[in-house]
Length: 204
Image 1 (cartoon, rainbow, N blue to C red):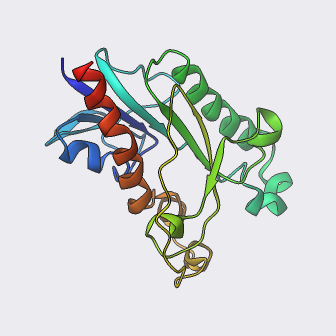
Image 2: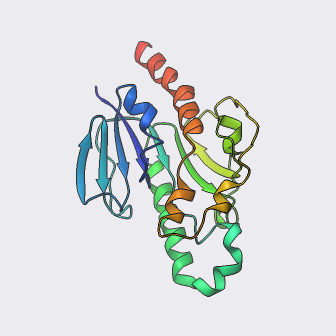
Image 3: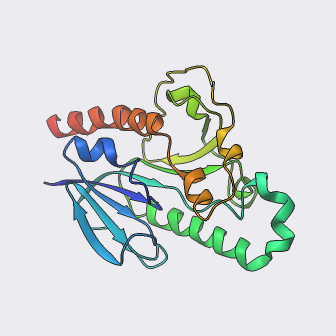
């Protein structure tokens, strides 16, 4: 049976890249993709609203979610009141949609966000990491809520020579997108810590 990987709120497709290169068909869902499904090799870019999108039928072996964090990240707490309740409600609703979806899956999954108020509204994260711990030399404390046998990858630290480069990005229309990109080193490490388990399951 065809093996599938889903990566939601994934405009860059970086999280899915190692899986696609290994032969898995990857669904990368983001409202910024053109409407519908557009296949590029083993990556299927899906332009859809996550509130209504339903995962494909098939053997999903891994699922990743990176819901928008701008309105819940504690780094932006000074602007919460200015933004108002609707922004907060939408952010929590999208995170809750991720939780609803993972409840229907039978594969390892992770929901990624920076340090945020989600810890108060739902529960504390299962893991935390910085990109420099997986080969990308910058700092950005990131939280993971995980389940269904998710395995935190072994760390491969490098010196964080680039510091907190995400905070140094100049204002631009795509600043939020750039800040939310999954560190490639972490994406590769997650793939490696789960790909072999998929192969072992096939041989069992």
